Image (cartoon, rainbow, N blue to C red; front, side, top):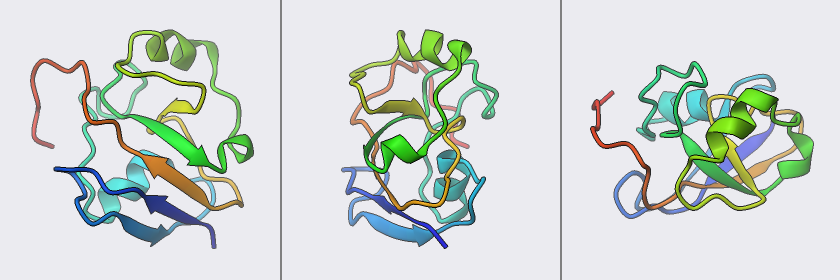
Length: 112
């Protein structure tokens, strides 16, 4: 079963965390299921950028982002070539290393 290594994040996951996840599960769902409260203001419908992450290892194992996700990533804070919306990035068979950015452009936290 693939693993996701969530790198330490100052407020969301200070110690970092390693979780096992089944293939086909989104990075966002894996985080939420394991107590990592990543923002997801649009309820994971690919309509915002609050769940933006950097996939530091294993990026090539993910399916390519579709045009809608790419359009939203253009609006995200701190985008780089390894950026994905975690609600759209489905785990394949390889392990991933994920970094949650320090900021989002969300003006209001909905405290999910």
